[in-house]
Every structure is written in structure tokens, then in C-alpha cells.
Image (cartoon, rainbow, N blue to C red; front, top):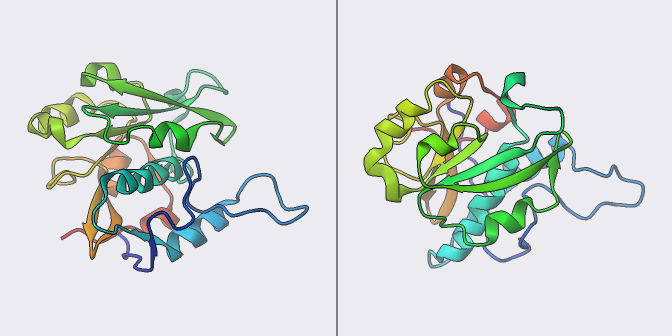
Length: 208
């Protein structure tokens, strides 16, 4: 199930600071301590972030913010977490193209009272217990084997690789009109026991 594409844009660097998630703004007095889901959805609807000159650092700052926000709209099976306070582990397999941006984005953040933990992996065997795994294109030659090795896990797989969804991946970043968008393979997510919010599905770009 793939939803519509959202198309409004904002210039990279215009208000997105390291460690700031998409969908949050300064609270008014007496506002709730955490950004509510509908606030996040509203901002995801309004903003797909424009890449000016395809500057890699800013592009991956944006993608890091997306990874953080994906955790708000995906439900993992209970056995995906050893304990009630176990962290949401975001892994990077292959080259860490995010630099410090991903670490900055998740630092001090929680979702459903769970903190975040970033890990870098050299092999897929190390990554089977993470919750969100970004698979860098540098390992795309082994993509079919990676997806196969993750078949019986509850890992949300994310990449930016052509044919990623067709290979069984779940979320794929694309650039269209110099903007960052994402596609979702909901069937693959369901097969892994993951429940993707209909709100997030409605914001995904259509597969081509």
C-alpha cells in the first residue's frame, strides 16, 4: 500500500537544526511536553525538504530526521524489545553517510518512553536485533542476501537504492524535483510483523 506524495518544500538549513526532529516547533505555555503525533503528521504533510545543489551533509541531516520520525509511526511486536525500557536501536549497515547528524538527531529523544541507540554494523548478522536499519548503497551488491538474512526479524529496513523495495526492502528514500521523499513497501513491513501507521503510508510517494 503506497500513499500519495507530499510536495511542499522548505530550503535545507532553513530552521532544521541538528537534533531537531521533523514535526516539532516551540511549545506554547502549558502545551504538552511531547510533540503529539498529529503535530508530526501535520508537519510531514507540509514539508518535504528541498535539496539545494544536492549538498550531501544537508541531505543526510534531513534523512536522519526522517529516520527518527519513522519510529513514531511504526509499531513493533512486543518481543522486539527485551524490556519495557529497552532502546529503539537505529543501525547503519555499510558506510555511515550521516556523519554526526543521526547521532545528533536522536540524542536525548524518546518515543513511547524508549530512548534511542545508534549502532554501526559491518555485517548483517550484527544487525538482526536492531529496529531500524539503514542499508547504505555501498553494500547494495549484497542486497538480496541482506534482505534474506533479515527475513525472520522485525527490522524496519531503509535505504536509498534503486529496486530496494522490489528486493523486499521496506522504506526507500528518493530525490524528486530536488526534494527528499520516501516510498514504503507495506507488504514487506507486515511480513516482518511491523504495523506502519496509515498516516505515514498516506505521506509516502508512489512507487514507479
